[in-house]
Length: 146
Image 1 (spheres, one colour):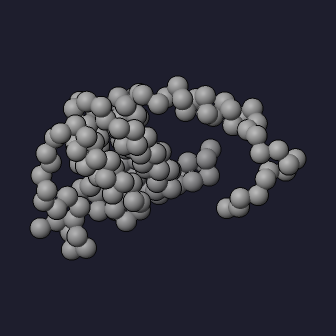
Image 2 (cartoon, rainbow, N blue to C red; image 1 turned 45 degrees about the vertical axis):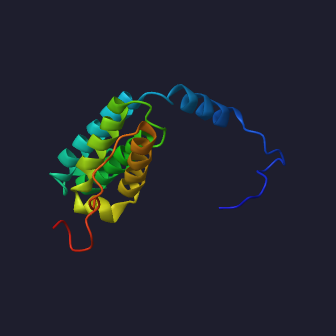
């Protein structure tokens, strides 16, 4: 990663970047859509990983690899869900449901820090909404759940 000015010497956004920013702006408040996309990609990951040795010739990857790609996509939607403040209890519940499903997958905890990031967002949202969460350990320790 560099902080250099892009080729051409102009740091202004190009058309592709402006389109990406416009798309991001339009998607900013669609928590239910993010949750459904997270669910869909998670389900796809589980299905694809069920047949890990199947070769998907059209994509040049096996089921395990494509399944990991689906998990990466799911994780992105989980982060999109978790990032903006939850201004209502129903939105907070969506974040919690996503978090609770992800936290029980020990492999997910090894693959990414998304679960910890979502947990931090949930705690802050609950604080802002005046909701008291259980203060017990939420993340498993190295030995797993007790």
